[in-house]
Image 1 (cartoon, rainbow, N blue to C red):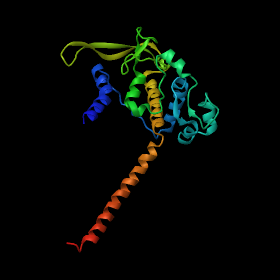
Image 2 (tube, one colour; image 1 turned 90 degrees about the vertical axis):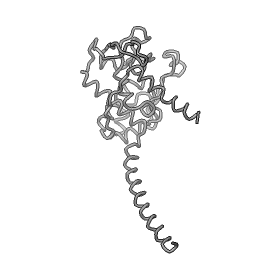
Image 3 (cartoon, helix red, strand yellow; image 1 turned 30 degrees about the horizontal axis):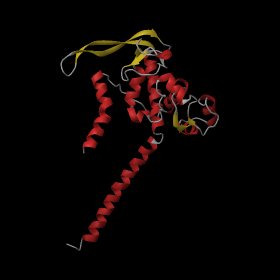
Image 4 (tube, rainbow, N blue to C red; image 1 turned 180 degrees about the horizontal axis):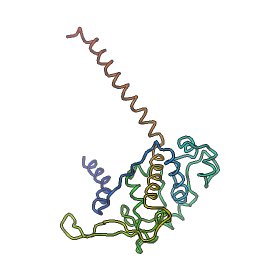
Length: 245
């Protein structure tokens, strides 16, 4: 029991940390049935993420099947590190060099939304801000001391974090995150960038479980079967036992 309680507390620690830092997770409001959103998300992932982050458990030919693309479209627009349609979405960056450049090798993102949550990833993508104390000049509200650059800066522009005075649980005065202020504009409006973050989150959610929609659809029929079978089994039980009492 002690081990179970410890495991629960350990799993909840990241979320407790977020609460202490005052980070608010925005609703991603994704739609896995929106193939156009998934296609855009795949494009953003390949163009902005795949240089450092792999998604090795997702194969390119699966993208063609699930995202409504032809294999030739996948080869022409999404495959830059391999010419084999059956390969996974891997990267060419050596692990030892990645560790030297970033401190730790960039993690594989195959199941990142399942590990962190959809709203977390969506908010994370939107929460980079200027911080001269960090190696890449940026920090992140939901992931303090983040060790990666803001790869979407060209789209969003730069922003700074504005804090306000608040109180911690002990009643002591602390600085609490209030809002972001735009410093330099990007190529997209805030509303357009929100859609980019949503499309990328949508795609990463799909990658985490490509069969999710099929599982949900099948689950309804399984539950219906169980309900019908329960009725039949109960009626059969009544028939078998009617002469016993």
